[in-house]
Image 1: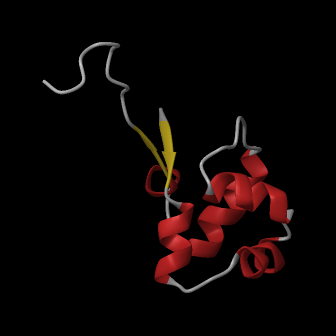
Image 2: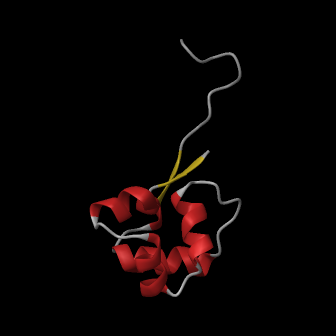
Length: 75
C-alpha cells in the first residue's frame, strides 16, 4: 500500500486544500484525493508540484507500507 503524507504536510503548515490548489495550480479534487489517500493514480506533474511546494522528496511525500497477508493480523 502506498501512503501519502500530504495531510500531515498540510497540517504542519496550516494549509487548506484551496491554499495548495492556488499555490500549485493543481485541481482541488486532485489534492483532496491525495489528502484522503483515495487517489487511484497521480500524475508526475502533480507530484513534482507538491514536492516543490513543501520542499520534500518523493519519498517524504509517499511511503510504501507492505500490507499484511490475509489472516496474519494480530500476531
